[in-house]
Each structure stands twice: as C-alpha cells, then as structure tokens.
Image (cartoon, rainbow, N blue to C red; front, side, top):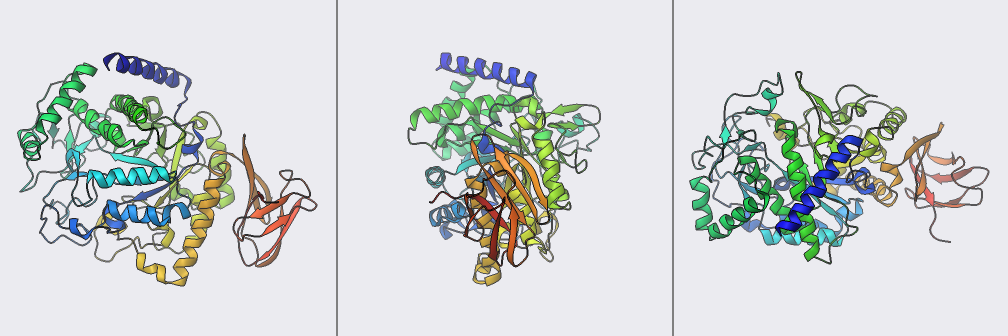
Length: 555
C-alpha cells in the first residue's frame, strides 16, 4: 500500500505541477463537468422519507422561524431517485448539503438555530441521525450511479460547529474563535473566525495535536474507537504527515470517497483556507476514488477523474463581460490567489444572478467568449439562479420563471438547479431572518396546481435536451438570427443543436444556417414535432415560445 500510495501521490503532484504551469486542469476538461446539470439539495428541506429520525438527539428547543429541523432526509432523496424525478429533469449530478453529524444543541447568535443546514459539523466521520444512516447513504449513491447520476459531496475544512450548552468545544489547539475576520487581507480571511457561530479550524497550524477527549469518548460509546484510532495511525504512517488539524480533516473527508465512491467535492468557504490544503485534499480524494473503483466493478462509467468545485465567495462579481475571464483568481488586497492553481477544476459562478439581467443574446455571447478562451476553456463554472446563502439570488419573487430557466439551462457552462427552482419554490418568507428565507421547505403540494405542472414540464424539456446534447453547456455558441432569436451550439464529436426563443404563437419559421442540409429531418424537443429542413429553415406550428432542434434519430 505504501508503494502504491507514493507512486500515486508523486504522479498526481507531478500532474498538478504540469497543469499549474500550463494553466489547464485534467479533470475539469472532461465534458461532463463543463456541461453538467447539478441539482443542489438542502437535505433537511427537500423531502421527509423517514419520520422515525425526525427527533434524533432530542433537539427539543423551539427554534426561530425556519431555523430548526423539518424532517428532510436521505430516504426522501432515494424516493425521488426511484420515482425518476431527477432523470426527468435531465439531472446528471446531485449535490447534497453536508451530511456530517451536526452539533446537537442550538446557537443563539442569530436567533435559536439548530444545525439543520449541515454546515456546523460535530463529527466529520459520522452521518447525522436526522439525515439517516450510512446504509441509507450507500443506497443513495448506488442508486444514483445506476441511473447515471454522479454525486458531489459538500465538504468543510474551514470550521466546526459552535460550542453549545450540550456540545463540547474543540480544543484551542484545534480551533480559534478570535479574531473575527474583517476581510481586509489574506490573513484576515484565512486566519480568523468567519462568525461567532463558526469556530475556525487552525489549518495554518504547525503544532501537532491529539484528538479531543470528548470525540474519543463518543467513538468509544459507539464501539468504534479502536477502528478509528487504527485508521488514523495507518494514515499518518502512510503519508508521513505530522498530526496537524488539517491532515486529520483531509483523512476524514477522503474516507467518505473511499467508502462510498463519491465523484467529487463541492468545497465550502474555499477562500478561507490556505489553498495548499485543497491540493493535498484533491490528491487524497483521487487516491481514495481509485481504491474504491478497484473494488467496485459495477461503478458508474466512464471513470472520469475526481472533481473539485469551489465556493470562492464573490468570485465572478466584477462586471458582466469580464466576470469569468479572470481565471480562478481572487484578490485579497495584499495577495492574489488563483484557485485553479490549487487543484480546483471549477468554481461556482457567483456573478450569474447579476448577469441574468442581461438579454439572453448578450449573456450567451459573453459567456461563450469567456469559456472558450484561455484560460477558462480548461476549467468549469457552475452557474445558478438561487442558492442557500446568496441574498442576491435572482428573481426572488419568481416573476420570470420561464425566461430565467431558459437562461440558466441554455447558458454555456454547468448549471445548478437549487431545489425547487423548477417549482418556483418561494425564496421569501415573512418573519424569517437572513438566509432562512432562502431555505423554505420544498413546495411539493404546489404540484397539484396546473401552473406549477406547466413550469416543471418547461424545466424538464430544457433539462432533458441539455443532458442529451452536451454541446449546449460545453460547445461553441453562434448566433444565427436575432429575429427570431436563434443560435447554434456545436462541439467536436457531438451532435450540433439549434435553439430558438421568443417565438410567436402559431406558425414560425426558424433558420438553421449551414448546420443542417436541406432535406434533413429534425425533431423539436420542446413541442415533440418533427420537421424537415427546406431552404435552410424549418417551420413549426404550435403555441410554444421555444424550439429545441436536433437531428432526428428516427427515420
């Protein structure tokens, strides 16, 4: 094992060095991640599939509005996988909020709040019982893979959950609670606590630490202390790392990949951790995935490299046209860090909600230029309408659900659907404070409404088309006509498509340029109609404002 590991690690680090020098990333170049359709689930708010775990650990205090557990769990996601809900949406990747065991008590810094959101970890090696069990999680991953859906695991290294009246603090050798960050410099982003509720892990520490007594006692009560200690001994012997907080965390996080065969990490609060830590995490996760694959011949294929996408707060917010042409660089004021130089394959594009104010023609043209030009052509972006913590989420009143869905799903780059975007789930909740109003439970009951059914069908048409034709997210964009607005997407080795929007009701003529020869039979994936190319165009006669055209596979 030591020889295999050393060979893998040296090869991986050499690859990283070469990629950093060339400005390219091997994993992000994969077509899947450049064109992925990611469904982001805030687990507690999605669906309650197992009522028996709703009151795990007691958690008896009455929380502030939308700041307590409501019952969503892993079994709820499994139920929707089995029903085909995600496949009908064209989803090829699931991203769940962290499933680690959370603090059991409440934080009171912003009203009585439980750790329903998953970002206040207590034990990085265990699943929170409110969310389910490791057997549940294994079933979820296995089922998703069987359906061709990959898993992004939400990971945290920056912080733990806060100390509460029933949750002991991590030792001062592991975490700091002061100073609070003031964002004025690199150190004032990485060497400080983001908030009183986020105890900052000392990832910069060079002093070896021992495990907290309370954690060892917890493991002893659960009957796994010997196993956990033995695994840590093996890890530190294999890697020859000193026993620093960051290396414990890297071990614990990569173990989830080793056990479940996860396909990638979504990295929380990436810019608040020294970037070298992420490079080491990527190495360990890559090794763990290879080990898992060697034992699981029925895994999802093809075997694409382990993927890592980061949340670098405010990346992508520096204007419209240049927002994603700036590589993965973030300016701390006294220091600049390019996160693509530290093993990230993609970044969440936090500028997209602002860019949605552009016309579709301008948005798509600007993004095509940015993502098909060096250096972004080698990396991925993850665009979104709304999220769990972005107060600037677009159209929080859901006034433009059809147009917004079209812009997200047809824009160059990967697309993130935040749970309920497809049902116009409310993003505003009276009397809810701060980001809680972005986390309203999934509005399943609205599916009884014809208007919600129609909107979901719109998302399904866009999503299935996007999933089937990878040129949409990863290809070259060319405008064919501005009236009606019509454009093509093409990607070498993949079928080309023609897309049109703002079409009139009834008969409409759509030019196809030189992409399809006269006589070609095309299918409109929006209306289901089949049409023939005549004199460089097709004619549709329906009530729809959109057309999604590709060469028909039936003759």
